[in-house]
Image (cartoon, rainbow, N blue to C red; front, side):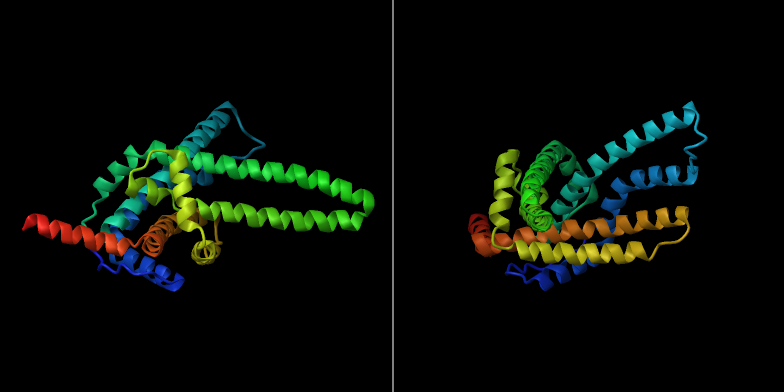
Length: 284
């Protein structure tokens, strides 16, 4: 597999995106292959549902059972696929970034062993975000109701401002936990609390950078998805292929951000140089 040079230096947002694309292109077979291995089952299930054209007005028992079984399989595949792709790709990118050889079998095996850690940590983060949104909705409802007693206009304006404040807070929390996959796979941590705290500390002070990287990737995804707005079955297939091809980009970018923040906050380049010198001395 291709390797990359040891550029252990702080990266701008543009550099992160540029190196992500270059690393993806230079290692396209590995990156796209990892995504395809894990995404093809979901694409297949989506195709079956789309091609089936089930009419809700003319369903029988067999159709209902097929929908339920398909939905369960789809959900299970989706739950497993997301952390598996993130973990396997993060480890592959790390190996390439550090000048090592990366193989699909090795990184998938490692991601499988860490699947429960990846899954439980992301579930907890999801519950934290969901709980925050629920609490915010309750508070906004109560506060908006109280303000409405004073003036309906004040109540509406207050709820709108409160809504945007909650959105900003949720986005900040989401960005703060963006480095979960590389931390789990590269640092081999198993403690969910430590993983979340570690991600928070590394991202702290650089949330805008993470946000801009994600924004660019989302825009690219939307542009490509928007360009496939044709017949339903063909569109589903094209969207699935686009997802397979684009999914690795976010994992690559997140992993490069992980190393960028370590370089900035922990002198990662000096650590690597120290290990290299130590290894040379030992060999001598």
